[in-house]
Image (cartoon, rainbow, N blue to C red; front, top):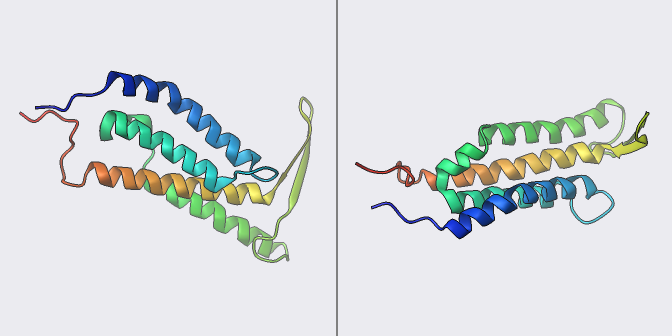
Length: 150
């Protein structure tokens, strides 16, 4: 017997999923001057995927994202480590912040710092760990509970 799924939960998750992902990106990019950053943004994105898992199971989670969780972990660690190494190569302290500015025709002068790249790494590591945890929870007994057993 297959478990019954909640239509209300499915609709709510479908409506909130993309909104939560946008909120997580806002927290990532606004984290330098306001509360937020890579960790808070990664947690909100993880919650979005967690809701998708609760509503639809591991098959809905795998349909939501096709990139393996270990890829997020690796790329996130690479971003964080390279951010520190670049500051060392330029003669500064490890993870010392640098400010970059570019003059874009349409937007004007845009400023960012090296902290953004470190925060992107933290965001990806947090998201990758949450996705890996959800994948492991879905396959804990070796069977997919979403598949119908004959």
